[in-house]
Length: 483
Image 1 (cartoon, one colour):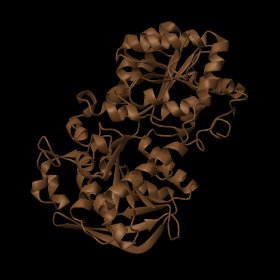
Image 2 (cartoon, one colour):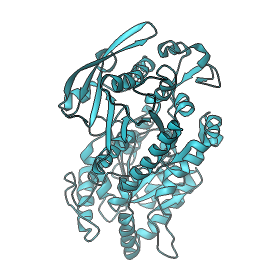
Image 3 (cartoon, helix red, strand yellow):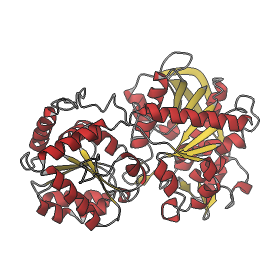
Image 4 (cartoon, one colour):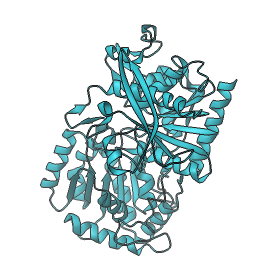
């Protein structure tokens, strides 16, 4: 079976969020299992700058609404099945960022990813790849299944190619003005509510949901939640129609990268058999951030700063948390509103709250290793990777009972002293604070806390099982296409 994973980002090439971790780790796991799989991405400036790539003698010409763009095809290695393919188009991807700047999204993002979606299919033809399955990810690749069933219907290279479309976050759908429909080269009969029109606009994700052979999202619980109006973002009706083709596959964590016994970015390594190094990591972390002494419970957040992440619950709880004696480290970037709020909070609570706007890889690793607890009070969370990493490092998650957090964190039972973290249900500051109080009760008992750390580190969310589940879905999609 030949798999082509179409994605707007993937480690180790380029990353803005968890999607890159998922696609990069999935390819690595497929390669480990000797499965013929490759990635295909746009060739952004940052990829060209940081990676040695090889230009092929093949290119694609893409027509979009009367405009023609050329795309040169690059590969990651000189072999018959390179690990990754890249589509070069300087007019569209030769920019400092992937999707936009601090001033907002690029105004031509619709054109950029319509081009990419067509270029993926044209690359298959140019290189005679003939994939059994194209695995599409998020809105940036959601037009591929639609194009495959319309513009490329019956193409001899692609007529047996199936598609799996993965929704990593339903909150980001790729919604654009109606006039961008011209770039698709589809008839306007597709711009209707039954197809890809969405309240007068063009919705990329809706195309993926309607036209892909199979669908999945990144946890079982989230697959159920998005069928309801509260979490469906206007697409719950479409999803209900495709309910029999919708599956949940929990994300894994890349334990080659995230392993405290091998992590070169932390000052002291440790493992399940000897966790002394964790105390040293906490000491260094407190020293770097100027926070209180190491006996104080230390909480950490590594996150995109957005309303989805439940940051209003955290901000409205800061006064109470400092009264409890908690110290807090936040690293991330995102909405200016939250960046300003937490920068001011750090000034107000000097010595108790530390905030780093931006992302620093070494500091993120140190937070996972050096904190006692990891906060994820998300409003919704399709899967989440932070809690998987934190558990591996023995940093106990405190999370809201939603999406993949439910599927991966086992709520602590105070009577039995079992669990891997603390969950709360209601989206309120008081419910969040109650979960923290429960955690502090365990922290005060050294024996119980040590067992909780061990149990968290024992949780196994490696990519092996998830990759096997994806292989099952690929086979199911292929069978559906072949009838």
